[in-house]
Image (cartoon, rainbow, N blue to C red):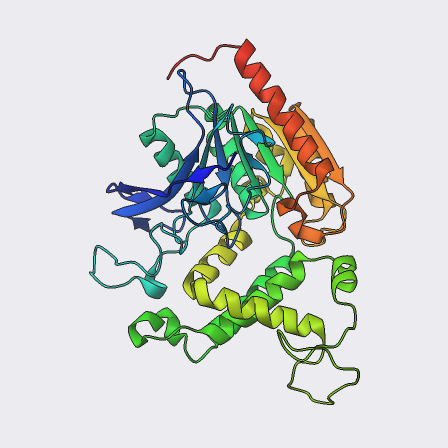
Length: 388
């Protein structure tokens, strides 16, 4: 059965205090829901998105066959996160460019587009905004919160900021913080954007231009980190190609600027596509939020102490060829949770796809998530939850 998605939006007038010391008021959050909330409101599952995703988590829009949600392999009727049993909520984060208030929207205090003046937001700020949305929907307790990559950081943060509101947390292909290499990749991508002549200090909207050159490079850098060496070699190798749609040649062109290899053509295509729909200021904000996330920072770097506040039951999943968020980072979280006596399920999936594996249709991975959510559903049915 095809799941039909309906985009929704909710307005919040009360200012949201941010970690940076500023606040945002009169903001909107775009979201979608799938399935039916049960009578005692105990079957809600919140899905947190990664860098360039949105609230459109699953299903398609009416009349748009090619509009599948970014985690449609995972969520829907009869799927691992079964919308016949769970009420699933996807929220677009504050500062994003897919419907929630962000840099391209008007600042109610000035009447001008925020641009670079949109305040810096953190993972914790997103979680606080999501909590407000759940309050408005009348949902006090989540059956589960789940996310991959940056979304996994949000799921972990939920378990720490609102432990009484989270019964289960799934942290997929994620980490408790970024290492220096990851911060370095983010910085190079940001510099590509801010040094684009069309960036205009982040106020490019006023000049009716888009810093597409910087966005293209940022996306190319990011895309390299999402794929494994094995996948890149299997998919492209050293095959020659001139440009997208052009037949490969048998010999080098001996040019330093033309497309020579298929991998170059592929990265340029991805960069071009990304620059047409993603906002440059949003890219800066989200990558910086990634950099800042570090729950152990306030505990002298002791992750076990940081995770002591969590009371949820956890599922962590990592992928062997994911070098951006390696299995070792997931194991750090597993150990810290076990040190606190928490209930943890952990799966390390031998998959060739790199970081992108968390988005793909890997039967072993999906089976792990399916079994975990089936237990949640069974527990919910056997253990009544008090109505809020």
